[in-house]
Amino acid sequence: MIRRPLQKTIPSLSIVLMAFLLQGCYNEETPRAVILVSIDGLHPDYLDTLHTPNLLEIAANGVHPDYMEPVFPTKTFPNHYSLITGLYPANHGIVNNSMYDPDLGLSFRLSDREAVSDHRWWKGEPLWITVQKQNRTSATYFWPGSEAPIQGMRPTYWMEYDSSLPYGARIDSAMVAITRSPRPALVTIYFSAVDSRGHEFGPDATETREALREIDGQVGNLIARLREEGLENEVNIVVVGDHGMAATSSEEVVLVDDYIDLEEVYITDLGPIGLFNVKDSTRVESLLADLNKMPHARWFKRGHLPAELRYSGSTRISDLVGIADDGWQMATKSRFESNPDFYSGGNHGYEPWHQSMHTVFIAYGPQFKQGLKSHGFSLIHVYELLCAVLDIEPAENDGNLDEVVHFLQTETG
Ligand code: AMP
Ligand code: ZN
Ligand code: ZN
Image 1 (spheres, protein in one colour):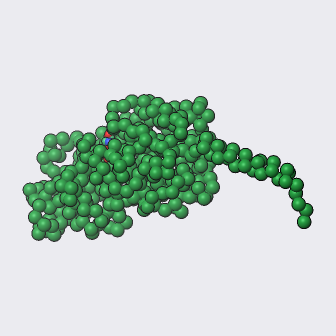
Image 2 (cartoon, helix red, strand yellow):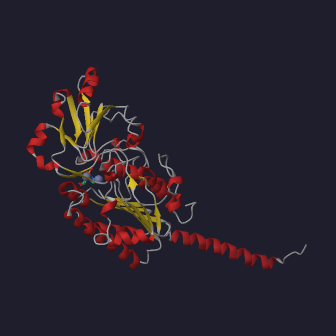
């Protein structure tokens, strides 16, 4: 056996040590990061070269499944919070945009500042907490849940929701955040205009497409600025919607007062879905039978919805849940007669498997494959996917990385 002289071993050890340290520095200087952009109410059919050249460019150079299927109910708050926790609404607590919790004795509405910042509504672990627990930072230029101290924590940088904050200012804030040291793992941006125009004018309207064209321009601006900062190959951009939009008409409305006496129920929601609590519990079966006489909708008792909807196990789900046919809406006579035009345009909330409720997922950046087209997948897997992209340990959730691991450059994440 030939013994190497010691003086030869020492330099090689120091080279190994130096390489190790350099590797450590390198990793610290290029920590993984995601900018998560939500375009509310974005339907896959809206993507075209005229209105969305920037989205199509990143789709062509990144990962672009045919569609992303939302969760039930196909509303903004339940879906945004499922995206960021990987939990179904019954498990994360945000079972609808408006709901009633019999244990808290409180009602929740997305426009109620006090409710949205009350941590008792928000269960599970949003991604910003997962990253913060693993010594990374986060910034939200809006995301449902970000205003509440969940598990005692808000995102590192966050703002009260302000629907009037110009979209350019949201991009500016995201750029300030992503160029901070240490670099945040997660930065979110939210845009509402496609959803609002979709409600008012319908999914096929010029106004809806024009709103998207402006947002697409903002996405283009974001990419250009990341390029200028030399971050294009370091930061991943993930663009998501939360649900689609079905065309609606005041001709396709069912009036619930024709079937039951409204004095018998508390109405928590009524439109594409209905959420009713029954004042006298002995009347549940009879009211259910009467509601099921209405055409173009199906009503269920809590705990008896189709299993695929995963809508059970929360006391916040009302006694009776109604779901209208795609594009149909339910209303009370007085609400309908006071503003029939409100019922024409677009709406959402229906079962997630309708094509109209599908939404968009586009991912682009160093951790994602380039030019991968793929079949549709469920929004429930996004949290697991983002944890893999960021190389962090996910909290317990309902998603499955196996369903989406093929989106990633290296299939181990
Ligand atoms: P939806 O009708 O379910 O699509 O809800 C869309 C509305 O949710 C938009 O008009 C937004 O203004 C509102 N919204 C979105 N994010 C937030 C938030 N973080 N806080 C309060 N309202 C929000
Ligand atoms: Zn929405
Ligand atoms: Zn909406």
